[in-house]
Amino acid sequence: MSVPSEVEVLLATFAGERFLREQIDSILAQDYENLRVLARDDGSSDGTVEILREYEERFPARFRLMPPGPPTGSAKDNFLLLLGASTAEHVCFSDQDDVWLPDKVSGTKQAMDRLESRWGADLPLLVFTDLRVVDDRLRTLQESFWKYEQLDPGRIDRFAGLLGQNVVTGCTAMLNRRLVDLSLRMPEDAVMHDQWIALLASALGRTSAIRRQTVLYRQHDRNVVGSEQRTGSLPEFVERVRKTDVRLINWSMSQRQARAFLRVHGTEIPMKTRETILSYLACGTDRPRLARVYGVIRHGFLRDGLLRKLSMIVDLWMMKIGEDESG
Image 1: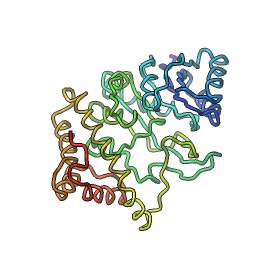
Image 2 (image 1 turned 135 degrees about the vertical axis):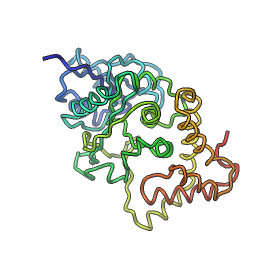
Image 3 (image 1 turned 45 degrees about the horizontal axis):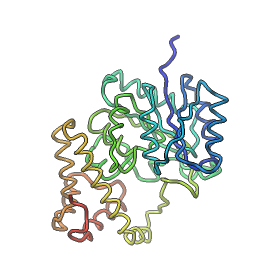
Image 4 (image 1 turned 120 degrees about the vertical axis):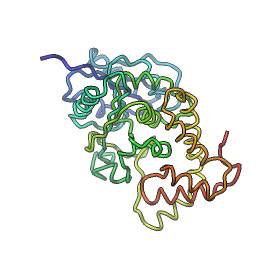
C-alpha cells in the first residue's frame, strides 16, 4: 500500500501556553499517518516557546519549530511566514487553543483528493469545514458554528458575497500547493489570511465545503477571533446599530482589501470578477445613500443573516459623504 502524500500543519502561536499542549496532542493523534507540524512563535513571553521546543525534541520527525525572528504582531503575518516556509503539497492552518477531532485531516484530505482528481492539482484548491463551538473546558456551546453564526458555506461559490463576509475559518482549511504559492503575494491590506485565501480560491480555483464539524472551536477570554454571542432579538439589533462606528471601520478595511485584490490579481482574474470588485468599491464611494444600498442588494454583497443585512443597510445609509475610503 502506498504512503499517502504529506500534509503539513502550520501552527501559529503567541502567549498560548494555557491550551497549547492539548491542541498539539490532538494534531499528532490524527488518523492521517503522513503528517508533520511546522510551528512559529510570534514573540511570546510565557512558556509557549518552551512547550514548542519540548515537542520538537520529542517528535523530531513530525514537529519542527521555525527559528525565532522579529515579531510580526499579527496572526495573519505569522501565518504568512509559515506559508512561505512550508514545503508540503497540502497544508492546514492551526490555531493554538482549539482541539481537532481525530479524522479532521483525513476527511479534508479525501475532499481535496476529489477536487484534484476532477480539476487537477495545478488549479488553486481549498477545502474547509464547520466547527463545534465549545467553552474553555471543551463543553459544547453550539453544535454548529455555521448554524449559530447564520453562515452559508455556499457563499464560497459566490465571489460577490465573499467580498463583504468571509465564510472560511482558517483552522478548518486545507490548501493545495498552487493556492499556497498564490497566497504568498498576500498584501498588508488583506484583512485576515483566511479571508484572502477564500477570495483567491473562489476567484481563481475550486473549493469544497464539508458540512460537518472537525474542530472544537474553543471560546475563552483571550480569543483573537471568535464566535459572536447572538440572540436574534430586537434589543440585539438595537445594540448592533449602536456599534455603527466599529462596523464602518470594518467596511473600510473590506474596501481596502477588495482594492488590494484587484491590484495584486487583477490581470489574472476573469473580467466578470473584476467588474464585481469594481461594483463593490463603488458602494463605498461618494454616491447617494439610496444608490449605495441599491448597489449592495443588486450585486449580492449583503451578508448572511437578517441582522447583518439590516445592519449593513443602516451603515451604508448613515455613512457620511467623504467619511469612507474611496481612494
